[in-house]
Image (cartoon, rainbow, N blue to C red; front, side):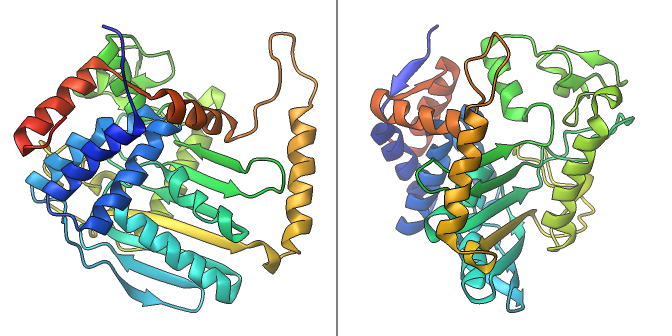
Length: 359
């Protein structure tokens, strides 16, 4: 069956009603909806409304607090640790990023580590919050252990994404948002819905052999760090994922490595936690703490233009600047609507029936 297309407004209404139904305040429900659907608009379908029922199932399992008391539990002039009180990461993360920006306004840079949170949607949304304030934004999070480090068959890391958003002047912002694995788990979920194989280099079997089975994780397999294998640099992807895990969780007091709670509600969190919930890490840097903001953004325009006009191989029209595809997709989907896989639609219909929310 072909994908079905829905307007951003219709999907927003449904998500907002769903978050409200589970007990979120009006402000939290509105923010969670905006963060969640930003993924669909930017073409990152794996992290958008397809995840909504997953959040609800976590709430049903009493692993998400719909009315959290999000608070700073430790701070210095330029740093802070935030306790998310088990809240939706979609709400906890923007709270923490705002604190990072407030710290940056005073100290030049601001750094915030978060514990006791949950899945926070796309990292790019939170990093991009800095763009309107002449700041560079950074965001990262650890996640459910689905990734085997190089040479291992144990799942010890999450897909652990990193995002950085850098403003320019007349050019669109530079926005890099990527998992530290060859592919995010959500990409496998999309392939599963379409009954398609995964490319070689995404996953391995439980014995470490390469696999193209999109359902391999269900049989004990693992995702692979960015680079796919040692010869192609998977040790570098492992290092990136480890960096995110340590900054997000070891630094904040959240669970790390194999102790990170699973996103799926039918799996219980480890019985021997080493911290509280999932961890995030955010950074904000005021540009004029380094050089005048307009001067910097003018040079960013020059940087972007030079790379856009790079000589390309015969099969390519141009070099793509990080953030370009997502920005272009955002404009298209706001105008033409957001396509959803029929299996996602069915899942959302069932969710609506269960909660009494009109689909």
